[in-house]
Length: 447
Image (cartoon, rainbow, N blue to C red):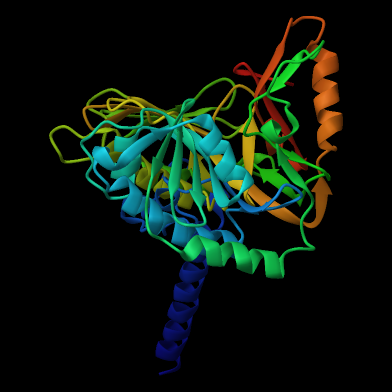
């Protein structure tokens, strides 16, 4: 009897040791065979908290124009006020874009600027749309080709919608009254919480005069104070403690439906992991650059026979959500490539943290090439942005402008600034990033 009890006791100890060892293998990634994850193909990756697909027609910023040049209020995507205002604006835009072409009236530039100096809301988008693609992304079937390229919209307090189609202006009348109530509410609650915002055209910065060599696009907002925003820490999720984070790599493989049991893998001289399957090649570099190249049809986006641009964008956004979920990425993303062509094949997306765009030098966070409803090329700068518990500020607007003028005035007869806005500039080095100015001069990014 004692011998049987002793055997049972030893058996229990052995089982306990086996369970501890199994847990050690599962939890300690360094004991897990490199590149292998038994659960990878069945992994149910959670959807990213901030969906790319939910923001495809969302503006990057909203400015409330109260009718007073010294009283304008800006709202960025992360603000609860932004969400409430955009919810109202979105319903008005759906009504406007559902109107037939005969209800769209071409107007003068004076009408556009009059709306901006009166009571209205200004919607500024991170890219340009055609009417068809914008409508398609909002769920409206619009076959009529009206606006070809717009990235600015103004909605007057009476509900009239103004479109800036690359310098040609249109008005669509609606009967909405909610904008007036929003403006009055803003005047009552936020009157002491905002610095003065002018548009470039308010100050005639968009015009040549005298020896003036610098011209700003008319809709660039000009701030009287420095812009405050969180300082964020840029993290490369591929690395942990100076080693490849194998768990993250396995999750990325799952996002691309790569079977670790059927792939061939190797490591390049610089430490880049290469995964080869019959369908394509996936590379993940130690500096957090992911690239995928199809060797077959690619990754299917749509089962339709001839997906258009808006269909492709929606499906791509859903795929990016899956990749972002695999790295627990916490920033929003915006579509930043023009959606003005009904047969676009190349798309770019960029991060947006705390309502502030993240910009990489001469690069985009995500680049995608599609063909016949399949992704054939995909690249992403894999990053996580963690807010610190303190804020930073941009240089004063006028200081940033003076620095650019001093840098380029000797090499340019005229400095044409197309874009200028607060952004996080990420040099891929990691570490803290404070808000700064992103400046684009005739499609050349000012460093």
